[in-house]
Amino acid sequence: MEESVKRQAIKKYFEPFPKWTVWIIAIALLIALGQSVGTSCTSAAMIALAAWRLWSWSQRATDDQMDSWTAEDMANLRKRAVEKSSLDPSELLREPVVVTGPRLRGLGGAQFGIRRGKDQQIRFTPIDTTIINFTEHQLVLFQCALDLTTGKALNESVDEYFYKDVVSAATQSRSYTCDLNKKALLQFPHAKKAMVNGRLQLNSAETFVLTTSGGTSVEVVLSDPVLAESLGGGQIPTQPADQAVQAVRKMLREKKAS
Image (tube, rainbow, N blue to C red; front, top):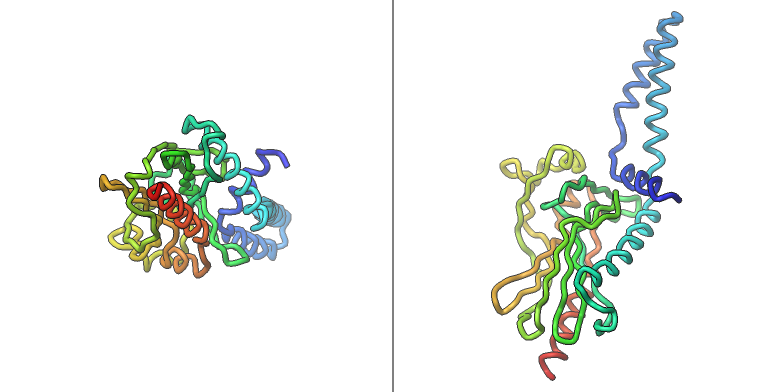
């Protein structure tokens, strides 16, 4: 599949069902009841427009395609993380770990999208991504917002943390509030319950947190019950974050014991 076609299919995956087409078809049929040549032509044109829009929307990616294409983008991103961190692959002690979650703030100009698939898994774009590379003396973290609609990494940053300076790696429950534009809010059909003073309120967001002795920390929001409730159900997998915590802790034990 051509890259442009693939990206269009991804964009459509996050588009809500165009309800207006149903109303257009219903109105067109009512107009057609007039049976005059003029009204018949008008109703036919309206139905054709609505049918085209429905067909266009139906060309969206499937859940399986989304997972496959996301995996491809993540594989490319892991390579980019090594290059942007000025690392040689020979310096890496093990495979990197990847922590992801919905990017609700600092979108870098990307279009926000979130959707519950037929498998009840919640998928989103852009993806808040942290890739942790393990070297002899440091953890090297590459962070970005992965825009699935373009395949591009936005707002990239690289930070290095010496093992001796890392205090902990854990998943914790934290509270967050964030602003979402009107387009983004349309993605949440039941968002009113989660809004406080016009902002999305996450009261118990499961978060990956890496803390250093200097008091700095790296945080990635993994999921929150509010997000699922606002979509009418579903779940965001957090197993990769748990695996990342285990990998970082294991490396810290080994390095601090030597």
